[in-house]
Image (cartoon, rainbow, N blue to C red; front, side, top):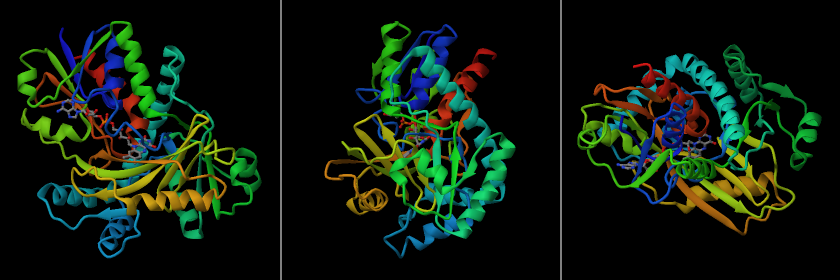
Length: 385
Ligand SMILES: Cc1cc2nc3c(=O)[nH]c(=O)nc-3n(C[C@H](O)[C@H](O)[C@H](O)COP(=O)(O)OP(=O)(O)OC[C@H]3O[C@@H](n4cnc5c(N)ncnc54)[C@H](O)[C@@H]3O)c2cc1C
């Protein structure tokens, strides 16, 4: 059977991986020269079941509206109107009432996914600056703490152990935060962090070397044309999936939600080792090996626009300087990426209306975390077709 996976980001590479585990040889088609050069290039690095909370809330909607009049929001809505944006936003608001159910579902998938990554890392012995040190969340006021406790109940029901810890416990876990005061701190030991770009490239390189995949550089424009060459297609094209799905009459409600990151090179001895999440600012921070610290965040609804806007980068640098004043931020590399986001935050991993095409896309803000789960799941469904 001739199989192609379209897109060599994290969803495509993991899908190709699980297909090869079932004995299939796979053509991995990618429009860019190397794997993981789009959204899977420089994200926040977190493999985080503890970040499963769906973004659908009136608070976030309000932040978006407020951003029309302020420059300082972590959610930014470009006022330019488009049909796809309105459709997406209406469905985002509609999903608010299902937020708890969605969060529960995402958390369950994420727990399994993190375990799958652990297994892949062990079996394939690939390097991707994996840190098995857990993830710390911190909150600055009572209102945020109450919200965190509510979310914890959902996480607990889904099977995730995120525990509240004291300041002394925090300082013992992460010495770079000694002296910092928060209203509350939570720790998820089972979560991890690692470099998504290295993971994709090193896993793809291993599969290439073992002659299990072929990497084909080309831009796919019509899935019907590809179906003349392949028996089955797996669509894993991130924010490009929506357009490609149209060619087989499938509507995917995926909007590109832009985020930014900075990579601080040579951060020195005062950089944290445990991955962090500042829930108020929606900023994540992950150590990638000895020489890099990644800080990422912001959500901007501004179409397929990849410009790196300086005023969006500044809050990430300011956060780093405030949290870790001893880190040298002279040498930073800014980046912007587009999260392929569905309005209800749930990824799409199923057979399409066109029976020979399988979908694994729309992973939004948690694509690094969730891809191993959805790829394994979609490949299992395909093999039992
Ligand atoms: C700032 C930021 C921080 C983030 N932090 C985290 C985090 O800490 N943890 C987490 O779990 N997730 C995080 N995410 C989300 C995560 O990075 C994404 O969900 C994930 O990378 C999406 O992977 P993908 O494979 O769907 O898309 P991509 O990585 O974009 O891959 C799709 C691939 O398809 C290719 N392609 C597209 N169209 C075509 C075509 N027509 N023909 C051929 N090839 C095509 C593209 O070139 C691309 O390589 C973050 C995202 C951002 C932006």
